[in-house]
Image (cartoon, rainbow, N blue to C red; front, side, top):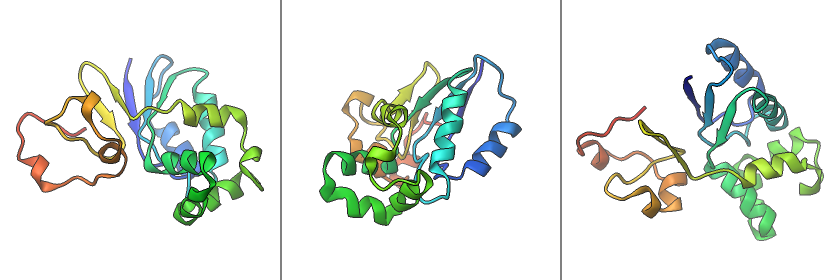
Length: 163
């Protein structure tokens, strides 16, 4: 069984479909979605339909990306809605033909709400953005895991491999 990591789909269902046809997935493989499955692209709703289909034959782990975080913030506090819309959320709502959050299916909300900040196996740690290798995973900040860009200071620390 293999683990496949896929990042930043950003609502591009056509490219996501092509990628899934290209990689040699077999039943029992795990797929770690590294966040940002939604926003910007033309078909976030289609991406979510593909993900739900994948869940029927594979373990699918969704890591929260900054775009899922913005969506959830906007849902729970409408003051954040304009920022999410400006960052690509409008395209997500359009793909659902949604006039409000109520038009997004409950199974999609459940999947977004269940997203994790990181996923750890015996061999690897998966995150959306970055981590501070000097801290245990339980001590990482959400800001680092969702928003922090790779910086040169991390590259000087030995025994770290980036997958």
